[in-house]
Length: 285
Length: 170
Image (cartoon, rainbow over all chains, first blue to last red; front, side, top):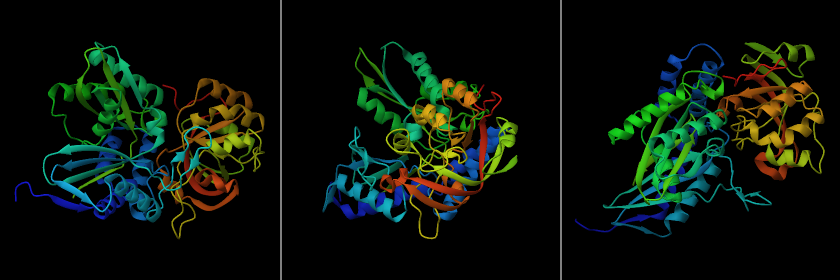
């Protein structure tokens, strides 16, 4: 019936987040495995190729054993798209998500990696909460959830900058290149690059993260950006940094860009680097 | 590919060349940021730093039936601030991931230390190559506690050798 409110219990959201975060950290990630195998077939013999073989073997071992792919099971970054007809009952969305993260952490033996306060004592909260939740309101009666397990190795080499407003494609490409040249070897390459352009200082970061969620092997619907993404990927792969920084043809698997309007005097840009394991999972409630 | 059992002899260390894969067995000490802050500050190093390699790693919890959880290397460059003192105290082998600064590379050469890079992100595979784990200091640090690990065939790569070779040079 049109405009009928749909009630979703917070327990249902908690259960979904628990499953998604666990799935993101452990796998199986068949599409990532396929992508890395394609890259492997292009690599010449050498330590970069050997490291890529270990990366692929590791994804298989994690899925078989139920051990996390990486000991850094990350910060749980959760994107939620909520329809205007959805009403969450029993508890708030935020606490439902946190409960799911906590539950995944306990049941799947994920590493608690959150410390507080961030300056000074930095004591481990031992429950990996709170998650970082980004909410988007859409029309309809569905609730869609994406979970990204984002490790610090790749997050630490990501950057946000307010570029000169006319820096344009060249400025953004240079920023991505500096990020990769300076940090890619620490981010477990071959990496994926998410670039958020426009909005303001906080939205560029969210855009860059959201860009990482696009399906592997998919094309940017904006032709100009699709071309720019390919140019960035090709240019950065000519650096020779390679898998794990050990040398090779593929440093960057893919580049993805999202953009928004911005103030006439600004060009906010975030370049978010994502490791080769690309630990994501999503579902629709 | 070369098989090495720890503790490693000076002769073997000299023989290693940047870029080669080494299958490592024997005892290493896992320590990362918080433990380094203690070891280079008020506390002493709780293992034989001269013979036991330092593995920059903080594992995920061990599920039932496993010795250790996922346990790949963490980013070495975060430890750079502690490395000069660790080298002065006798550290000669490090296992981590990613490039470090050229200043630190020259210090490694000066002290005759070798940097081995494990495969970042390959924590599940590493877990299957560890036979025992014993926490030896600062258990309250959780995943950052210092532990001794018995490796059985962990694949690593020689990143910096004793002759100036550098796997990251392009």
